[in-house]
Length: 152
Image (cartoon, rainbow, N blue to C red; front, side, top):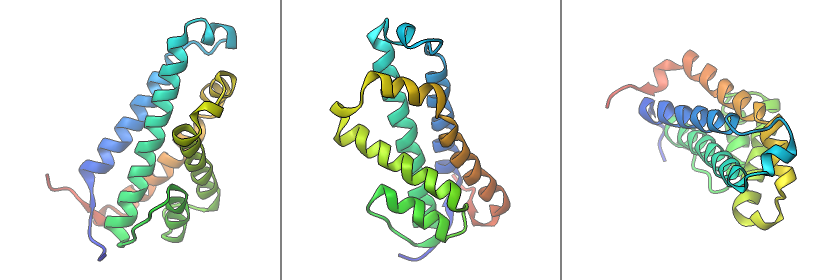
């Protein structure tokens, strides 16, 4: 696979989706665990929005590696290593993204093991990891705008 240009449309689309999902999670009642679980729909909404934000972040990373660097990845955890190797961000963000990829895999493949309490804890206090990685990608893109295809 030969490197090409990163689609601005995909970058903007995925970052907007991540922001939207984080915003939606923020609308849920996280003042206490009791208020969060009082309506079971909060649990399903939090799970869905978190999983969708993680999927969009992984899609964004995979797109940057494939289009910008000609590197295909088959596992989500490989995206983190690839972005660090490409200089998109440093090892700290790479570790965060690897952890997020692992959690996404748990959500999809071992969903029955994720408790309501764990979901509450993550959504009420750890969403900043998603924002941190997204911001690092956005910063890299702003510096490397020459790699971005603005057509379409």
